[in-house]
Image 1 (cartoon, each protein chain N blue to C red):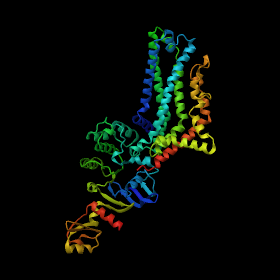
Image 2: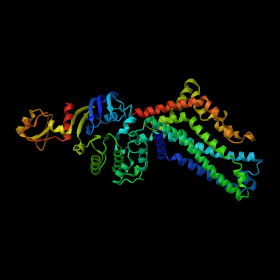
Image 3: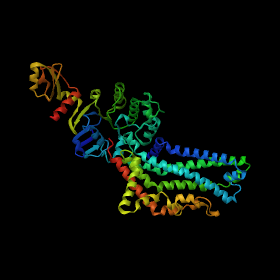
Length: 285
Length: 305
């Protein structure tokens, strides 16, 4: 498998603030990677560096290109949705298709029109006449009609209702994703996408806290719910996080095998959101 | 490359409909004005009536030709003034609006470089806007000549001779196109300055465009008691080298085009060679290049989040 993205010691400073602080990682082809982090963690800055929208220190290559210096070449094979409100409000749907068709060598207009017929977006409508959900459908229809190697989605469903959000990810998986393609998503609504991710990366204060395939999480992390004496024993096994719920103690273990925890209580793989909170708290200690 | 540039310029027409609405509106206003003039003067003596649209009682063909040229130059002047305002507002908005509505992130997600985008705006302001205005002038002129012909025919005159036989269409139209495109090129340092402000100003681009030159001029006067900067900026507005050293304003005011019977027409008064060999022409292009590069640099490097 080949790496689409190679980052080694990538940093980006804004004055004294280190938005991205010496991070190294790789993204392989055919993955759906979730980049999770709180506001101000450096997610957007990192994405901007990947997309060539901002320069950065360190070694960064995307599809073998320097994203900042070779942005035009890069944009032929990368798509991104940075925010839902990003389409110009004055443009008509047909004009938008005309324009993308004229400037993008990998865009298939018929494919985009095919996606649009499944929505309520009229081709003669102006973007300002569309609802927020419809604008996202329009944007996604264009993006999915571009034969790109890497798709970057930065909070793509922000401000959309649950129906649109479900449909958005459904379309993405069913109509777009295949082994040739790679998707990088950031979102606050982790629980909605954790089932479709193949890999996950946590970022906080510009640093990567976790970079792992999803299926390896079950091997490394265990959540244990218990009470009483068992809780005291569990505490002795050095959990990375502890919380209380309905009088029960919930522990999160990293690198402790399930045999060790057997008999102490109910075990399961932690939800990504819980794991994220635990990792952030651990990093702040 | 050219395909992308054409698509980018087409996009400017979609976004800024004033590019063609303004000349069309001016055309309608001018035509209505001509009609009003004909209506109002028709109450006078028949001879006077004919002076205005048929020029029948003028001394000869040359004067009639000149009278029609005055009319053409006068209406074109209205378009030129409108073009000036249109260019200022267009240039100041062109790279500001996309930041304000955040669509810049969409435009930058496509395989189009910042240089291509900024150059498309420069070309639109300096070449496309003047060309569209020239089209508007031609169309309006044609409509007005038809209106004149009908009027003259109704009054019993021979429009074929009095109007169509006397009007120097080729001379007038070509002259209008040259003046407009030349003024776009001549004013290009201003346009590039507006583009730069448009991509750089966080808010109030209009104020940001006009305040610094005024402040700079005032400072120069306070410190050195000279007005060199404002003089250079002000004189450029006259497009001097195209009219044998006569300023555009004086050219119209003093009716220079009327100086000789054999020399009637607008083209004869233009000095294209003088224009392109004038140091001001080249220094203007240089300043335009520098400011355009600065605009590209700002659009590329500035983080818009």
